[in-house]
Image (tube, rainbow, N blue to C red; front, side, top):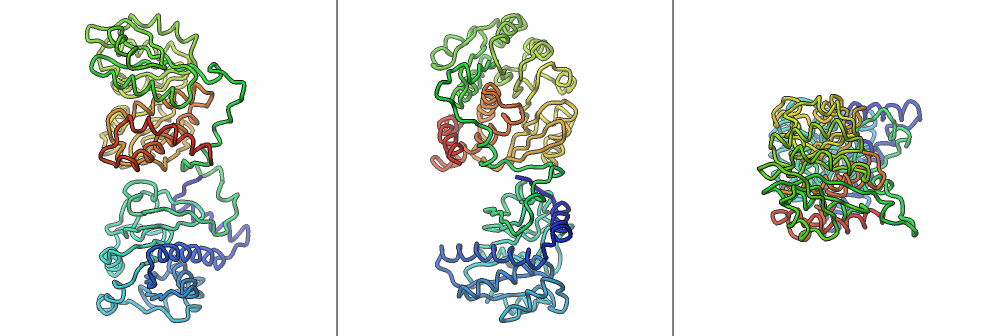
Length: 514
């Protein structure tokens, strides 16, 4: 599904009206009705009867007037307030204001807020129809006071299209921002709803069809996308009854060093658990005995090591011999930052031709040298966290976090790799500038070993025949989905990496059921 910024959504709305003759009134009617449906459901769930609609003077307010009309028809007690004067409301919003049985009460000053405060605070549900997607700059004055009052009410809030005070493009609050229980957004989801902190202000996000022609919502010119269950499920064909393990790929994982063997175990199990036909773990030879105990379904390949217990350049020949047998390589988890291991990594990047997933110490060993990625012979998928991403392009992690989409695009453009920028709302980018944002995952996944699982999953899906970007998309989505299932069982603070592995089968099953 496409994600849009405010300008893109306005263009889509304009084309719907100009090229397809869809009226503003029709779009507003469908939008407001969908808000009323969400409000009715929430009220029925809590046994509530009273609603306040707090509307601005633009089209967002018009959606709120429509919602109020439908809720009144359903028998709810609805109080409608207009921030401003009725005489200033124009167009379709004014037409819907005039259709209300009882005109909205005007709030034109702080004194009006004081007069109506008790009425606003005693209802069961608040509908935020103050501001739409086009707002820029800090919210001030009466609008700021209105948003503050909505939040102080400590009642469920449904926001219309975006929470008022949220930058629809960046997800950043514009000084003050409504804390919604649910956001009902129209046509296509707005980018800021899925970027932090906007994702937390939005609450549950409901995307509704308001009658915009489908071809406008799938335009190839829109190059930011949301990972969804239905799209990811299409990437996996049904397994044939006469298939065998050779049909599902042989994954080679180069990982681990003394003190960091867990990363190798997690990545290997994740690869086999997500469907790889065969997995071989290349490990420093001193660690091989323990790996043969810990890993039952995974083969091991003991390799020459440094005095510090990490892979040494002496392993190059045996690794390259393995390349003739495998379909995908995962390189990096727990490798250490030993300089000799770094030498091996550099030699491998110019020698391997099979697809490589490069993660963790594999990225740290580059020492910020993007040319090593650009000159690699193999198709590359890299999975940096913000700190690792920043080192690749000479930025601090805070700067990376302030523009995650721009950072992922920059690294992908400069390196030619598929980039998976990990973190809350993981961002994927390819060298053509296309971007995907993940919709699964939770804060409990901020735990050691979780990234190693993702690395093994991506390699597994490549081994099964998916292209690099598709393998990354699928792995990121399913990884987060398994984390969400695990969080429901054990709670966020207690979630650990093995909980995610344990729930990968359920996540995969749920995906297949779509």
